[in-house]
Amino acid sequence: MDRATYEIESAVEESHWWFVGRRRLFRRTIESIGLSRQASILDVGTSTGTNLRMLQEMGFENVQGLDLNDDAIRWCAEKGLGRVRKGDVCAMPFDDNQFDLILATDIVEHVDDDACALREIQRVLKSSGRAIITVPAFQGLWGAQDELAHHKRRYLKRDFLQRLQASGLSVYDSFYFNFILFVPIWLARQVIKMMRPTLESENQINSPFLNWILNKIFAIDVMSARTVRPPFGVSIFALVGARNG
Image (tube, rainbow, N blue to C red; front, side, top):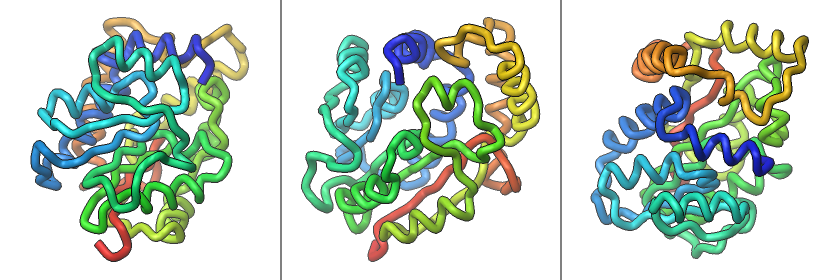
């Protein structure tokens, strides 16, 4: 992402409906795994610290992040969100079989060689470990945020699961989420394409009242997506493990 886009994300990630709702989904999943507070955890592509914030609030003591961007690393440090090393998801500076839990949320779509990134996640994940991976869905939703965030692609769930399995990962759970707002988001992105406003991030299109409304809707979405199993959504969630785990 460009620096201006990072700056906006850093300012809003604590309270913006999208980040708050994702943390609800991730937190509930992590709690279901039953990790000890001493479990070794890696957040890949920390960006400005939204997952590190959640893990800190959950009381985990052995957490570190990885990001290639110096500004992202600096913002995480300024917020007191823990250790973040500089490194590439396609060549991570960690030993094999090192982490009990890996979060790679909305990072794989930024990488030219996503297969390499997934193999690296498999490599550093313990045989008994789990990884939470999310990616944006449906190329028809491509919009300003994809351009600003330097995304390479969006995915269909079927194709993404095939890539996970080809990388040596076993898929324990997967589903689309952010399905309730799928049509409004698609429509909003078509309007943005036509109007071509000057934006540094879609996160700028917000207000306290709109954020409150969308927070409530997205909370229902992430609570129900695993049960409803919708055939579409703005994003894909996958809980995976090592093939022999």
